[in-house]
Image 1 (cartoon, rainbow, N blue to C red):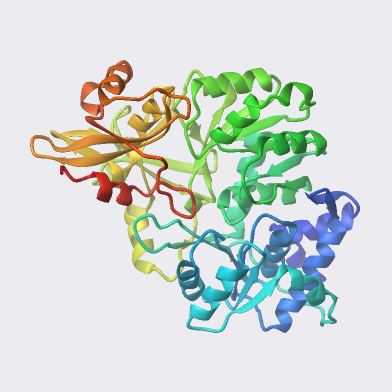
Image 2 (cartoon, one colour):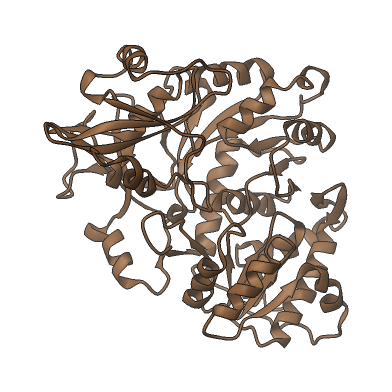
Length: 512
């Protein structure tokens, strides 16, 4: 970028250009054993930006990505932002109608697809009310080889939109959280601090789906510091393959959900692998058991174990629980990160006393600018001048936060508030339970009563409500104990993997 003022910008497009200039032959990406250097990544991004510009894409336009994890995803995001346009990551597990809604709502004119998104992407583009051009990854070589004029030089301020991240929409249409380049820079600073990414040879495993803010939130800091990103292909989680990848690619940091870490630490190949380079193990999105955290400490004794918590609208990390506190404060999401200001408030926006439950509300540099084309939802979310997370939490006397429920999932039984997440976290430690979700059932006596919907562990004996209540009574107050038990083969989930509680309530919530 010839203009000095544009080159001063601090966003991932400029970071890419700096690394391509200063360390051209260092490794930026690794995927299926193939390497992309910083200079190669820069060249491909410039060529793709030129191709998009030739198609009429300009600053402020939207470009969508419907692909699995692959280098082309990174290239498409960076090329889009290179023009000042806005990236729209789309979950490839969505149905065509759901994708069509996102295309229409965002107004995306271009949709990148691969084999995972080609069929539904074509169907969705056909349903959209405006023209959407599909670009398949198999066409990219031809697109990049075609002669184009150099892409225009665009000065992209840090407060410009970089992404529209659509929330999962468990209770209605998804909302598009608009994240700016400043939001991504803020997230980068948070993760660099939390993971202590201070070495010159950092290698991060990108295992979360790239349509998710968790993956993008780990890519941004690696582009900032010039580390290497090892991309795990989309598909079923294979612990043997991941363990091999951790060793062969000499990964230094990795985020996985607790169930994936459990598969890793229990795998019989781990003792034969050299995983000493893994300096940071990170987890979140679900509670980790005492058993798992203990085993992780045994398998990775020298690694920094970090739990992260947040949400898409916050870019996403708001709280971190360090490994030294993981067992002592099990169940906590940690303490707020320095870039976040938070309060715990009641329905009237009054701060609740320490130890009592309230909604966590945020301000900070990671906070989205609003919901795309949805002023009503934005106004509601920012009511009172703070962002309403929807998470009900309490804070202990040391400042550690505990999430007890989502506000909309709270059960009121006989005048007592029962927070589903708190009960689910306790029940998840039962050896006979693989997965659990708590819902309300109608009750003539109590108004509502809690019901546990459970996926049994494969090798567990038959579980009864009496036995479950006896076991859980050692961990929970009696009014929180489920009064009924429903066994299912699997919990219904949306395309983002979140449990569909409305579906469970419809199926099991009636007293009949």
